[in-house]
Length: 376
Image (tube, rainbow, N blue to C red):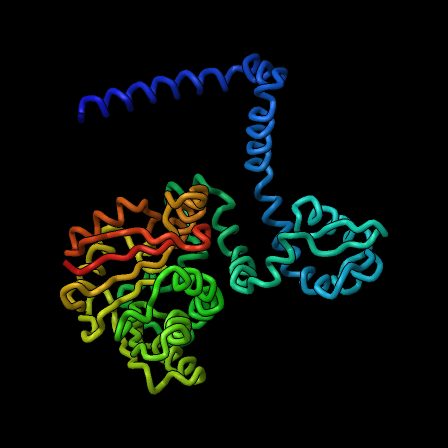
């Protein structure tokens, strides 16, 4: 069986090599375009290449729309360039340029009377504040990507490593309130979508007590509490972050249901007593050694048959494969972590003492995936 499998993969590799040679040949590509049976495939590939070449301009168009609050201005209905220009703080000619660029990306839409309204993507963004918060954060990342080769060679100090101070701190638990405020606020603003997507695919009410490790300001716990009124809550994070969580959870009326603990989840013992522990956008922020230590620490805190929930993007999740490029460079600029495939996470879990690892399909895999593991 193993020999047949190797033979099959070898054959597939030879076919791919043949394909690569053909696609690199301009004459072959011209034949694809000329043939009605293959023209659609050739045009789709050409469009994908165009998107790769122009992708940065696409993202900058989106950023300009968000920073100028174009979508909010259009939310009430279509408007003319002359009406929109002063609201955007632009001259009419510049406003029209932005609107045309936005319309080409389906962020805005041209209307028959010369006005502009929301496009499908622009309308969706209005209802997704988490995405808007992340888009407003992107200029820091873009600055680090200005020279990707220097970034790969480790020749530049990145802005993202300063934005996420715990990634470079020798003793992250000593970070003060001022240092954690920017990234904590971003995580709180953006975690809602991830939390609701994961919880829509999993019955959190089957558990008695949930501990969210690296829980930030308590967004995931707040969403879990709304779905499971009897669920007891626990949160563990750095001291300065834990204080922010205490304030937010109290404002949400959850102070009486929540125990808050602080420390370094790589070095300090985690509190026990929970039958489920969640790691939301945490594992991919760690290198393999740190991720392994974290998972072992989580395993020690769980009872036999306790449940671990890992909520984060997986680089081989169906429909979200291209996000691997984003997270590869983002974690590199951040200074720690890496995107992983499901089998790579499963291997780390197995070494840490977990069993029965399974991927739960979420409604929106492009946002996040959910891995459920049992303490063996």
